[in-house]
Amino acid sequence: MKRSRIMALIRPTIMLDNITQIDGPFLRRHQIGALMLDVDNTLSLHGNPEPYEGIAAWVKRMRDIGVEMIIVSNNSRERVQPFADKLGIPCVGGGYKPLSKGMREAQAMLKTPKRHCAIVGDQLFTDIMGGNLYGITSILVTPYQLEDKTGFKIKRGLERGFLRRYRRAQNKNGGGGR
Ligand SMILES: [Mg+2]
Image (cartoon, rainbow, N blue to C red):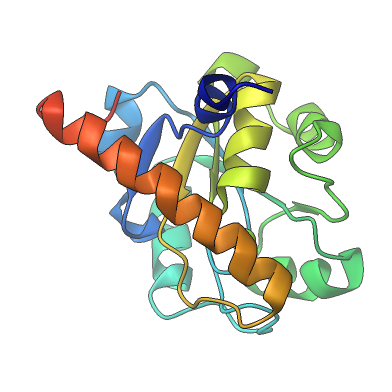
């Protein structure tokens, strides 16, 4: 596959430092009514059963303004369900991102039409590529913690290269979203 084709597939629609930057005006500006949420390193530290600080309050803010939320994780249902219950959000485990399986399942549980849905996650090759292939807005957040497994290190190394290019392109275009 050509490099430019891969670049397009894993290019986030929007890049943020932290998921808690998502608020009402941001969602209105991008016409987003529902969020499909990654867990590990987006809402919690990898494998941690507790939401990261500020996440529970952010979820409440989102709920208060009527934003639909659903967790879509590649992690097992056993890991994801108790976590989702803590936040009071429905969930789909075994999502197989970047394949569409989990997002399709999630979409069926949402009232918001697909064109107003977005996926939020920390990985270019799962969350972002998944959202782009499925055809929804893809929002990249900075991972809370870098994993120390070798496979992850290789993937993060690749991501860094692509991210540098995206940031450069974004700065050239005067920054700010899409
Ligand atoms: Mg993740």
